[in-house]
Image (cartoon, rainbow, N blue to C red; front, side):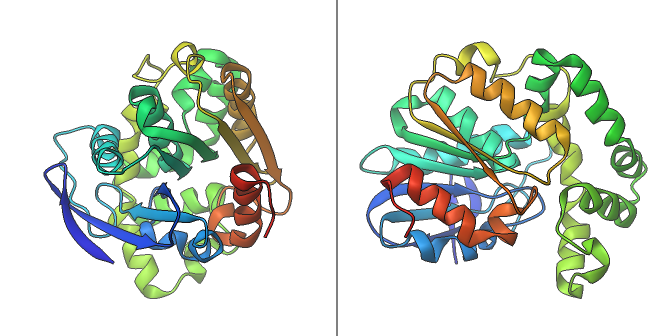
Amino acid sequence: MAVESIAGRKTGIRYAGGGVPAVLLHCSLAHSGAWGGVMPGLADRLAMVAIDLPGHGATEFDPALDIQDQACETAIAVLERMDSPAHLIGHSFGATVALRCAVERPELVASVLMYEPVYFSLLAAGNPEAYRREMADAEAVSRHLTAGEWQQAAEAFLDRWGSNGGFQVMPEAQQKYMLKTIPLILENTHSVIDERVGPVTLENIAELQVPCLLMEGARSPEAIGLLNNLLEAALPNVQRRVLQNTGHMGPISHAPEFTRVVRGFLFGDDA
């Protein structure tokens, strides 16, 4: 992994593979190394750049600025230095960043591949009842975050969104990283969770012409499928795939299956 100055901030960045350019954007509480199970399976076709999102890995975070604003600024700076439009591959919060970058700078983007973009502000706009249920289901996480109870927040968060075993079975180093980054979930609230009209709307994504792939795990919370329903209906050039054996952490827990879906979408194969 390298550390570079991108968009005026110190940024952790990883390079892998060769071919057409792609930018990989990880989920909250992770870092660019989360793509370690995916990159080898795409390295023969994609020249990949995976960045640490703000406050994650080796990347700086300015708490005075919106976290998604900072993430998009960094991702767009990476896209601008490429020789041709790039594929954007994002997971969870990273997928919201990918979608916003495509809306704001479509000329830099070849396609957008999103695994469970947690753009709940769009759910609020398109399915208010589902949004209210999701906010109720997330109440325990929100309560612990607001109280600064970081371990309880991490445990509650992973119970809903993580892989089997959750916080308690993680190695100590991973637990420490989780406790360091869990406060950043509060920073995501304004960007993608609050009921508000933001820079991405169901109306302006309907103008996005680049090919899009929506992915989800069959074992994910109900709100994910309902949100993807809205995105699928709004996006004019979209395919959708469900990974049957996993949930929200599919790109990490089921990387080979995720990689096959990506290859099928981009290249028409499943190698």
